[in-house]
Length: 314
Image (cartoon, rainbow, N blue to C red):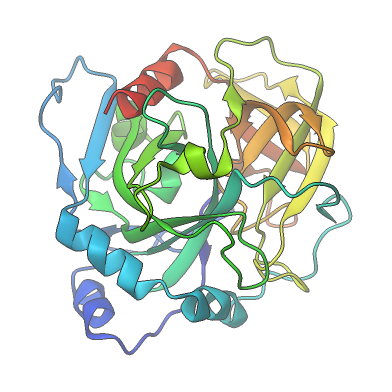
């Protein structure tokens, strides 16, 4: 599943420059239809031995400032208008209940110079600044260095409003297996404090996260699909029982027809709509087809824990 490709053209000089540096277009039955791009985001070499299962990107202070300036609320609202992935499916329902402040849209620019988005979630962490999403929302699989840029997180986003502000992404940790082999599609981001110098989870709280939890039970999958009529402006929800897939990649699945834009959205077990809280056990990673009936997510095992730890200790 890939992030949703939103705009193929933009007039800003920075985007034109990035398009010139683009390395290709990702395709297929993913939630994102266009690939990430090579950026000036620094691939951290510390801990970057082949034995290290985690790869980390860092964005400079200049890049983070540019990201916040680029993603105005007007631009956020506009980005979904140029993409239409068809009608919202019968399994994906508009979210009803107390809005989960922790879940929001993750905006960025991809390899074609298009403005686009995924879904992401603030989680409890030692540094109070960690956001979980899919690795393909950060970088292209099997393509080291081909990364997304101008990345910001808008928790609680709804219909053009960012009630809790916008947080620039400072760094992104993902499994080296994703970077090299396109497996283990999970990422942990660290975001800057907001304009009032408040840490993310001090503002919106954080979902609990579980590792090496047995697959099963009822799960709520959330995401900002680019399907109509919502077009990424409203949070959608699927509910279903998680089942382990019979593969060698360690994935699980639920019945769900969320599509592009929902990539990276949380799978929440023990979810209570009265509080908007649960336990994050996976994220939206891929679909069974372009007309989906099933959503896949990683089983969060030891490598996912190392990714999360690298972020929360960063």
